[in-house]
Amino acid sequence: MFRLLIFLAALALAAWGLSWLANNPGDVTLTWRGVEYQASLMLALGAVAALAIALAIVWALLRFVFSIPSLVSLSARAHKREKGYLALSRGMIAVGAGDARAAVRHASEASRLVAHEPMTKLLQAQSAQLAGDTESAVAAYNAMLVHHETHGLGLRGLHLEARRAGDHEAALEYAMRANARAPAAWAGQAVLDDRARRGDWAGALATVDTNAAAKLIDKPTANRWRAVIKTAMAEAAMERDPKHALALAQEACRLAPTLVPAAAICGRLMAQAGDYRRASRILEAAYAQTPHPDLAAAYIRLRHGDSTEDRLARARILARVAPDDPESLLTVGRAALEAHDGGAARAAIAPLLASDSPRGRPTRRVCLLMADIEEADGHEGAVREWLGRAARAPRDKAWVADGVISDRWAPVSPSGALDAFVWRTPDERIAAPAAPATAERPTAPVVEQIAAPAPTPAPTPALRAVEPEPHAAPAQSPAVVSAARAGVIIDPASMAPDDPGPEERQADRRGFRLYAND
Image (cartoon, rainbow, N blue to C red; front, side, top):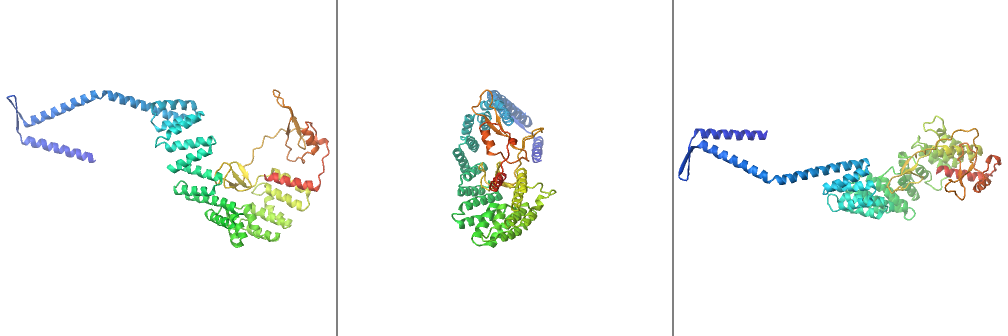
């Protein structure tokens, strides 16, 4: 709109000028070499304008003629650049598709056409990684360090290559260089993971503060990680400096009230200091959020001099905090068993044994507790039944991280990740397909002798134990095992089973419980 107004104004000014010249005619006289030329003013102005236009056209033609070589060179460079960008695009697509051969070919073409582009160096590194050429990838990442735009990208690539090679010192150095130059999320996380993996909790805490100040992590995550680190520090200082450990645990509970290990440590240390009321409140608050056996154990054993009846009463008080959770029922049942009240123990876990229970089948801990109850009542047959059910029962909740199941919490997972352990039900293992039913099925494990492969015969036979069916009898006698080690096949059905005494049966049950809990 503004340009249109300017154009209309210029057009009006030109029309006014022409009108003025028409109303005020005049003559122009030119004397050239004694000859006098005379013309009207309008004709003279038209001749001057035509001459100016002619000169401009001639000058433009001359400039075009003299710029033809540069135009040809510019067109060639543009075509080369277009081909380079096309090679870059195709190379990145090949990297994403996993086509190593095409990626290397397009990277070579891009480096020949547009070698100065930062994306070319990235494509070279990515294609070398895809082809398994570590040396070329490292060289490409080192070349990125020269340019300001690709310096951070080169450091990250070198960090990843060092981690793949197992050189954690070099990987940490690259991460620290990147974090010092321009804080990045990956660099801060790498430094934090290394500090946590080494158990350098003070350094890990300082790294979390630095990452939070640089806005690399949000505030809830930073508080959670601070709580985990302070819990680890409190756990390490419990024996050496209980007061300092208590202060760390209290700070961890303030930052993350749902962190079970922090609440358990805080409750135990407060109970040791004689502050039973505050310890009870902390444990009850944490148990209401996450019913956990560690919290229950710390709660019912706050006072060391309590009798088993007192502990049963405390277990029932804690169960009111989460009355519908299986952990509350198990806690009351175990406390009742320790108080030698078998009826109360059975009544406590009865909802977990019902066939129509919404929780499904009884878990391993439930079956093992029932085995203990039956053992206290002297029912040996029922004990064996419950131990057999425990072997096939679903898993209980445990600390799980990186596919590892642990009965104890740890601040760092086996892979070095901070706060990776989660309290949940582990995934069930996928069993092998069941063998087809036969006319006669063994009732006990059978030790078979398996011949070695024909091309490379083994000097001694290998032994393989065939797993029993769920309703199988106890394990083989020592005679069978000795014969199997000697390479002799013995049918267990032809031998009379040994009758172990009470002490041996008690040891077997303890060993089975350890196996079932693993």
